[in-house]
Image (cartoon, rainbow, N blue to C red):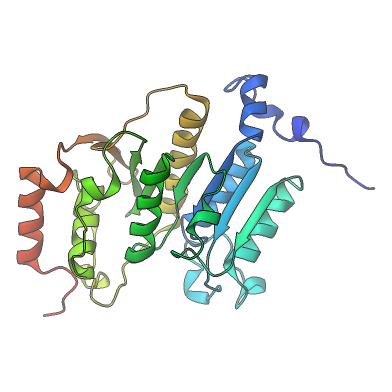
Length: 289
């Protein structure tokens, strides 16, 4: 028996939380996602099930067995395959009508214009340590007036921030500039989650090594990121609901059963942030002693 895809039937259960007119609007939207790994892959599939009609997706990496604990595209059958292709096929299996453009070399200064061409929203799915690519994509969003969402998987929760046109930019909040990568890593971690809900239940601190660019992760964190980011995307694209823009954000931690809204005027220039970074430097995170 041959089954035919029908958009209205496929996403009919969204109706009630969105109107039929809003669902039709979501179908016209184009979202760019850089990174198809832990958070980026599940971002794509979640937004595809929301009924978004078009995507630009970028990733240069292939799947490895070390990805199995958290990346939705990582399976025995996908080992060694390009992440961007595996996730594209998974998304097309949900909605064969998707307009999907792949960027198999990742994002760079050479393709940023094409990557963001006609895009309504950017969702950050880059690896934590992809400093150059992240700095370039958020700078492009600020320049092109494209709203951007980042949701970081921290422990068994997520920290969420939105950078909206005309409001505080990623660079203004985090203050990366041309600082070395270790400084960027520290500023990113402290800036994303001022509440620090995840730190109290880290049972093996040696698993974090910023110098070697590695840290622990959970599938729970990645999936919570996707749910939060997709909800922010819905509010931004439909212009309905309260959207917290940087320097405001929030962190939800399922292990701690806590939700905290954060507000750091001036971003990492805020006195509390400067104190947090000073204390973190004293502990010299990521260095084995």
